Image (cartoon, rainbow, N blue to C red):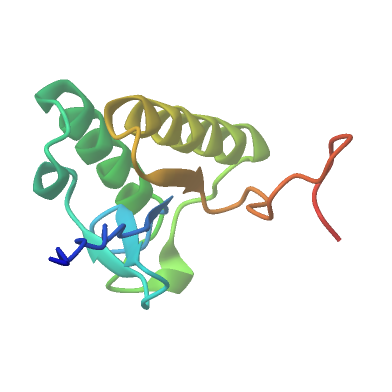
Length: 122
């Protein structure tokens, strides 16, 4: 009797959190539960159009704080904050479309898995 070794299929779970942080890349990536590290959109093969949109979003976020003197930063209205979050959520959705094997979410959104019947798990 000859036994053949079966290859185990290795699945690497990639979780991407779309999040702005000053002077950092916007994709915070965790592989198999590792600590999230910021990575550039280009490192994941995202389209040039989406990478450009991430860059514009990053610049917008950087414009909100004077890094030399944070107390001298411009005022950010509730409307601008909501628009900034809406763009971040749109970027997350577009990233999901371009990277269907990854789990992608916007940092402010609840990421707990849904339970049967809807709503987040307790």
